[in-house]
Image (tube, rainbow, N blue to C red; front, side):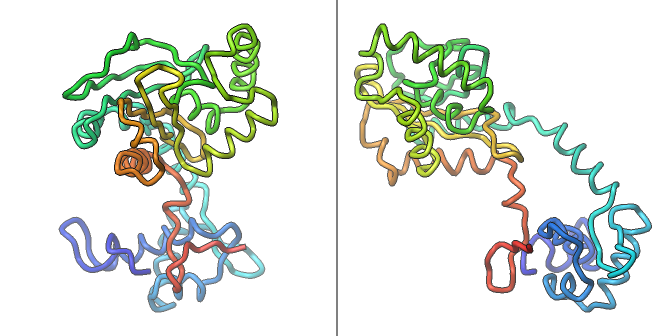
Length: 278
């Protein structure tokens, strides 16, 4: 393992402690019990050292060992640590804290939404230096189908409550189809919208929905790959909708840094790819 977080001496721990923690972190990549030799090889440490570290972790309940094969796997205390971290992670505040910087970097109005009973609900609003003219504000509820924030939850939100909200919106849009010009609201059309949004990694709406305004939005994801919040940038220049625009790049980076995904914590294999043991 070459991750700099674990290499060399630091002011907060010795090299031995860093190596031991690297070994424990490496175990998160394995779905099944792993051998001592494979663990040692993945962390590039001597098997004898790895054995000593594992013995200490077993004593603490962080690691357990199978009876027949002698392979190692994460123990009950490791599970308790993970659950404690999950319950204490505040996705909303983590996403809200940097909104002024994101707005300043992009020159766009930034807003944070969470999923409410009727759609995406605005809980934080950061106006750009040149604010956009809109009736939206704190507490506003945005629809799933014709807002960038809503499309984030449509794609990455919990599907049971989303399904009911989506069906209610579709019934309303049958009476006012002009609100979603060109959108196929059939089951196939909605699924295609979800797929396209997921593949792009962000949602967007153009000036056809709210004349003169365009918006891009991306999810703040949890361990289950579900959106806990959506961060949205609103402006007037259609160029920001391009997947390669600097605004899209800044938005996706911002949200990725505030997401907590197990995939991102897996150690790299020797060829530099993420380890994915069977």
